[in-house]
Image (cartoon, rainbow, N blue to C red; front, side):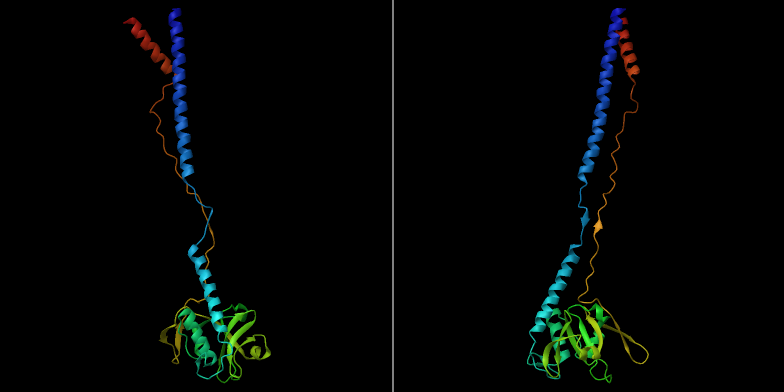
Length: 254
């Protein structure tokens, strides 16, 4: 009987050790799978719209080109109906500048160019915008146009002095000021005429306007953990021991 008890003790020890090794292996497999899943999901915390950033830089470069081209006209003599550097009027110079830099064909007169623009306030002026004036004492409405250069200055073709740069806060220009506008990116499209024979104009996107999308915070997606199917039934230590004892006992009885 002592031999049988010793054998039973050894069997219990071996069975317990085997079960502990089995459970440790299952736990290690689960931890490694979760860790590999998490390490595979990596991404920067912030993302930016590269296209919009490039678009903003392009607008700034075009505006700088427009102002540089405008300065080349300084000193050009005034000529009514002219639109070249041998002689120009105010709207002729503006028309040629936007044609060369943006490829846009603006209307010929300052009043028509005003209708081409989107309306902006004087306090919203940016370099490249247009300023309109009524120099006819209210008889004709808009009759003069200048290109805003920034820093309170505009370049324009004066009927008495030719193409010059003037301060927009000079008394004459503050008195004659009519409105300001931003040139549209494409020609206005005419629609059906309204009552009175007036033609409505649809606005397009301004040349110097760019929309910058705000950064979008990246959110790590939830990764479902793999399902590990456990054995249909894990025998308890007592079940293993009793099964081994029964097997040994049966072999001894045979």
